[in-house]
Image (cartoon, rainbow, N blue to C red; front, top):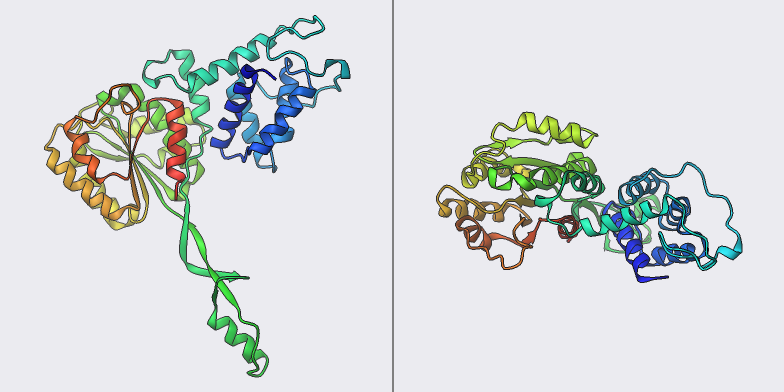
Amino acid sequence: MGSELAGVLVGFARTLRNAGVQATGERVEAMVAAMDALDVTRPEDAYWAGRLTLCGEPDDLPVYDAAFAAYFGGRAPARPPAPVPAKRRGVALFGRDDPDGHGAGPGDDDLAVAASTAEVLRHRDLGVLSAGERDEVRRLVALLAPATAARPGRRHRPSCGGAVDPPRTVRRMLRQLGEPAQLARRTRRDKPRRLVLLLDVSGSMAPYADSLLRFAHAAVRRRPALTEAFTLGTRLTRVTRALRHRDPDGALRAAGEAIPDWHGGTRLADSLKAFLDRWGQRGTARGAVVVLFSDGWERGDPALLAAQMARLSRLAHRVVWVNPHRGKPGYEPLVAGMAAALPHLDDFVAGHSLAALEELVRVIARS
């Protein structure tokens, strides 16, 4: 199998992993082997080769269908393909002629171009995309599944190992009239952390606001009860309820109607103080993973922003700052607001491309 097709398949598997499907290395190898045995110039064969090897449970199937449609630019086939004759083993790659001299079908080049385009778009700056490219990226962003790692909770559950559970052990002894019984053991239940997203919607963030709000929509849809989303500008606005809409476009329309300072000025310190006073101090930010999306431009006093960031860092489990300019060559955090916030951050990552957002998913999931 050529390097071009291998890169396409690895990119598709990466998209599935970011969407929550356990597309492990072994499954990817099985998909590659299936591709070698089928006519991979046909979209139907490519679809079923991936579906039968990369999906491990029924819940993976709708996610796989959506990922295939977004990545390869087409709808999923309704039924399995007909058996392929043995003479077609080891045929050409996507869109190439096979060794027997048979040309690719009329839709094969479209499949290859769509897959290659999706891989290229992963590294394109979100602020300079064309209208068509934005539509492709929107479909891929909707597949992201941001979620925090679990933490040990206060409650316990029975376990074969772990610490001794005195109450259960005593109850066992009482049932046997006080005779020594087998020690009961317990371990702490895992409890997911809350995820809080703070998105700067000022004028300087306008090229990236749409993609970042769609990222927030994917996070809210993944865990509605454990994810909160707010916008920062000249004031603080809670958009969690608006982003709970199932349709991404409908969610963004509802969020746009709720945000009064869209593409306005920037008062990060005041907005962050309003969040901490009304929401964060009361429990929303306590022990949570807080992610701020901003370029760091601040009209007010940077010292005030530093003071609010210090408050936030004391409350939150981790503070992640996502700056779209972070991934650009030669960037340095010289803006006053960004320089004031840096000492209080646990992670400072880029957010200018789909690949950067995929990396952000992994940063959020880090324990």
